[in-house]
Image (tube, rainbow, N blue to C red; front, side):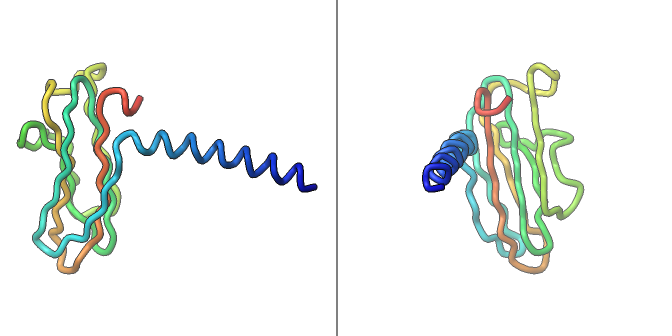
Amino acid sequence: MITKLAVATGTAAVALAALAGTASAGPAATRTLAPGQQWCISQYASYQVRGDGSATAQGAKFKLQYNGVTVPGTGSPALVRYWAAELRTSNGTFPGPGYYSACATNNGTTNTTVTLQIRTDGEFF
């Protein structure tokens, strides 16, 4: 019984370590935004980029920017709780190498806690 538990625990630890390695490719960051505040995280991309975000309370407005300019079609339509945008050379949607930012703006009336993650190139498939 103890041997089976040890094997199961060891297997679970290996599985969790594998997941942790995948999730840490582009570390997620969290910040609380007051109404009207914006926050962005940036990273250089050579051929593809993906931004992910989540927000509590009323949500947030999210967007992906390339060299400081919002990429058309990557913004959330309004305040949302979950968001993702992806640009790939293979799909013809990647504008080119440069710095990309995943941004969140709190357009609501209460504080919201936002989590952002940006992954580039080999960090996602």
